[in-house]
Amino acid sequence: MPAKASRQVLADQVQLHLQLGERVRLGRMYGCEGDMLNDRNLSLSLGTLSEGKVRRLVLDLSVGPRPSGVYPIVTMLWTYLDVIKQKMVLQPSRTIPLQFSNSTALIKRNADPRVEKALKLLQNPMIVEQARQEMQRGKLAEGEAIITRRADEMLLYAARLEDADYLKEAEALYRLSNLYLDTYRKFRSRIAKRQGLKTYSDASH
Image (cartoon, rainbow, N blue to C red):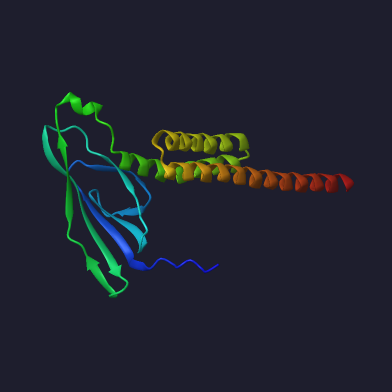
């Protein structure tokens, strides 16, 4: 079979520079790592971007209550190395506003499904790491349950929304749960055998 063509790298050293609006606080970051330069400015390092590849990230921002009106929440600026032209590129900055209102009808509005989906998918590595730590402590059942519950949730979203991405994620989590469980069971078995041999050796002396 012919080898698949590799995706062409278009940009390297991709960074997203953010300036938070007044009284805006950053909570957690999903899908990226960043450095807080001060209380309002941070830089996110995104590595490389390839042709046809989508990169998603979600930022948890706390804005607090405000009077009705439109307020700037975050101003962002992209910088990257154009691999083809071999020069740094500075994109124009863009400010994202948020409208505040006293209307109670807004409470019933649903979240943007694109953001909700990206957040759920980006949370999975953290949940898997939590499960891995439980298994590493010897709590295999607890670790397996954490991953399985998340896989079940992804499967439910896949069926409800008819979304192939959720289905793919569910299948990957089920496989990962079995892999982790098998790996840590073998690890514990080897440890038990070593301890048994050591006990036997000490008793022989």
